[in-house]
Image (tube, rainbow, N blue to C red; front, top):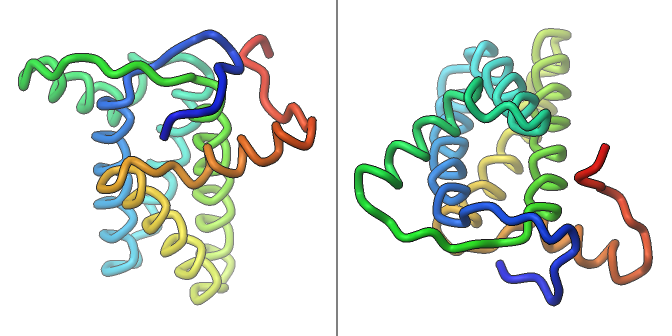
Length: 150
């Protein structure tokens, strides 16, 4: 999803993000089918290391980078700030879902993971980032909610 104007002037590869979203969708569906809570812990870890700008520690980032290189997909640059905001939302959903599921609130956790799966699917299949959309709305009302200089 293209933003109206660059916010951070740092860019990321949109194609790599879409492949990451495909993996996140698949893992979320795996959790919904199996209830294996380790999936949510894995997703939380992966979101956290990508947010911390440690892409070499992110298995999903490494997979997406490998697919892009193997398929020789040309980079499509996108503003990094909205994607970072979306990753933070993904981290929150993963952690909260993990805690809720472990605490016996399985149904609520399943609903949260379903929302995560749908949002990731929109990014992967439709190139529409729900978190980025919220970011742009919040930015328009002057709520600068994410900074890449943190």
